[in-house]
Length: 122
Image (cartoon, rainbow, N blue to C red):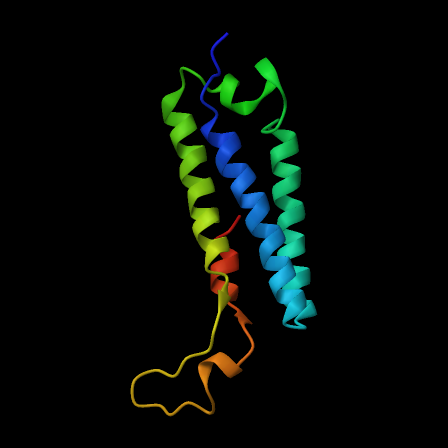
């Protein structure tokens, strides 16, 4: 039996990995608030994946259910791709804008959570 393509599953797995990575990064930066916010978003993502059966086996998973419904599948994938991109860049460093002087080396500053990035995640 041929393996069916599971693009939603694949991107959702990548998003889960990014959630874990970002929580770890915030914890390493001693930013408990940032870690807690990302953990809450991760929990909401987990709830979403469970309710839509993204990770179920066989005929029950979301990829299988959306076969033949490419428009809906594409919308789900666009949302997941946006979340993946936001999660990849959620750890931002404060950098001076043009004309401003840095108070120290950018590499010396702890990573900061970009709330604007998080709002687009879910």
